[in-house]
Length: 233
Image 1 (cartoon, rainbow, N blue to C red):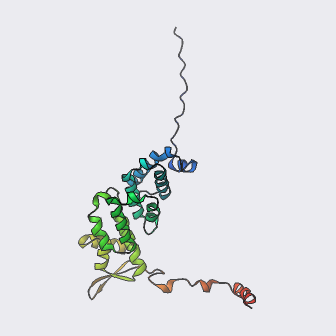
Image 2: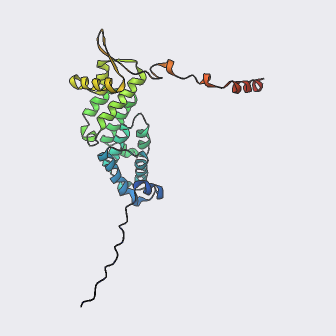
């Protein structure tokens, strides 16, 4: 009889550390650079976002400029634009060398950022239409900017003409009708007929209806006020 061969117990397969673990362990280790680049692509495909990881990658590029991927940097900036009104784009741009910013694709993204910051939405959409090769690689870009435009309008106006909304979110015709139906059903928008066309009444907030803003002076307890008088005396 042959001797029975004893099988070696299999070692449990070690799981790769997550990006969060890599950042917590040593965010300045250049060895994690490929992991962070892959994570940018993962964010693009899964339509997720992690500013801290992206800033860490841009900082590593500062120490390892020869390893910089301009494709990855462009995707980071597009994702940062999608996070507006957060200041993520400026935070990322600060970490990108000026020589890189002078490349055409980055100059375009900077112009787009300026249009968004100044609420010049028609100019933004015109420029974006010329730069589809940069923007369309990131799913959800158009929807994110439309949400930002609506956010700006809702802070500024109590009611918006249909034509103004159409320019801001770059939707027209039947597509705009369907969009408005959805907003009326789910977001509290109201449609009215005006002298010059349809008007959209936006939900009230403390910015478009200042009377809703809380007066902090009304919330100061009386005992706090009485304590100030001896100090003033």
